[in-house]
Length: 169
Image (cartoon, rainbow, N blue to C red; front, side, top):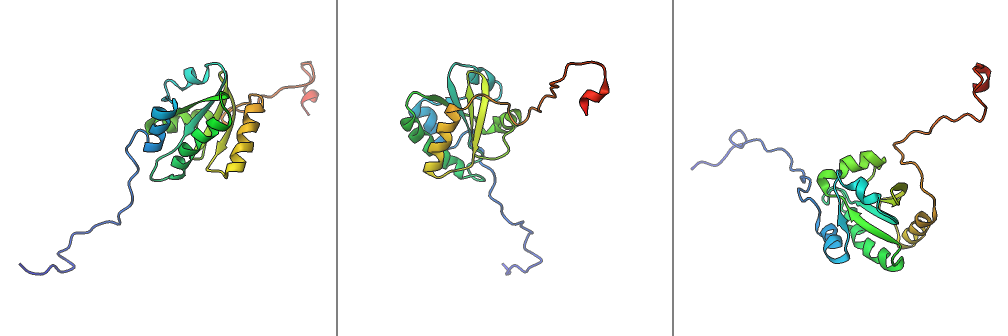
């Protein structure tokens, strides 16, 4: 055997940590197993959010690329304790997260999306300090439904339609 020279060594690209292939990382699955969270994919999310009451949907993101998503999954049971019987929780499997995020205009992982009886309310993006979470969740549970960020603002005129173009300037 001869020692390898630089020309004998095959090229190896820099290693990059690959994305997780788990449909849901361990702390997300703990939410489902131990705290009764639903696991809803992009085909069932509308049905789940349409159920009565306040609902919080977790988009944790890839556990390798967005480790703070696991932190949010760990914090959610604590938020359930502080706000008992105020909201139901669901998590979205990794293979459906992009479709659900697009549907509701979420552009950051992790995110908590709030819904009330089928209507989008708001989102809390990223991992937050505990006091910020408490205030943000309390505010989300008190605010009225709104449009998801993906839906444009409708053009509404306060003037009656007259056929006169001067009303639009």
